[in-house]
Length: 267
Length: 246
Image (cartoon, rainbow over all chains, first blue to last red):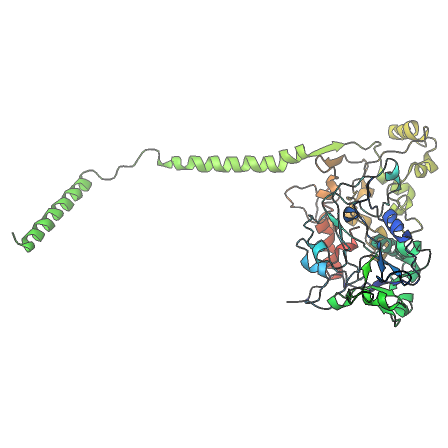
């Protein structure tokens, strides 16, 4: 069977990805707030049940599990990994299981899409995703009165019963392309398309760009000897890289479970 | 009696019976039953029902399904194109590449702060909208659902497509046509298509339809399949969902 890849036309192709420096991350959560505001993510009055909370970007806290005074913590901001996969046997996990072709891997941008109007909420993708990136809408979105005026018109609001996830602020790519087209260009500059979390991070821990373009910052950063990806052993080929100079954090990335003090306990 | 004799008698009896039935048939040959042609009645009834249901589906149903509204002002596109030139005069691109769409009142006020002619529709514009400074509540024929991203810049600037390819020859019209919308989905009929039988050609083929003497007032259809078909045809690839969806 002929390999049917989507989006390999005359357009320039990108492979957008992210490098997050965990040494710089303070766990402030500004990326989460920026993401929620940018992507019209709804919230409830009572968000104590975190299993039902809707986050596209989520900051996890991990600890090395040692008693005081050797305790160390690290924060891991986790957007969608936009897994590229390698081949049919190591394909993007959510894409290969979706029965409705809601989600696909765009070979033009390297972004894993989610088309909410196609989704019927079987949540198979949530089961397949090893990173817990995907969230289900248990309720219709509601905003406090007056706040609906602050919704982003570039992002469609999701209804109850569908799965959603981080899109690397894809609407910003669309907007940047729109501007480029109006100026008669087809290619984008690095600063024209940046995600909301990247711009919001006060520590500058998040870097975003084209992983294939040597002129982009992420190209150099992903080659850092301390760079790693989450659960690399699964062969999902994620496009979000992390950098940490701490050994136990790097070990934790592959869900290493050693004896106490070597492994990681959730903070 | 021996077994063979028995058999013989039996066969004789059978032969007599057969002869008797033959005689009957000879005596009264098969009569033509009256009203055999009646089989046509259910057939005719079926075809009448078929046609009635087709008419209900293609004529009555769309009348029920779609409601019509009049535009607030009967706008004369032809006159404005003659005065101002191309579409871009009023439907322009903003600096960031986004498309302005239907002009705001401020655009109209540039010329129509006071009536420049004697047309009653212009008087209505000045009286009801310009003087109180109220935006005109235009009904947008081509408004797409909220999950759709459409870049006019990509189509007009890069692909160099004509406006009429998708929108029809709006610039040649003297009057605004009624805005029809689906009572269930509230989407404009221009999206779902004017011919419910789906017999029209696709929107982007509009110009060819016109050349061959067609009489469609406005675009044929602006559904996702129409976009996808043209993209596949023009670009030679199937596009991803995250090109037009947002």
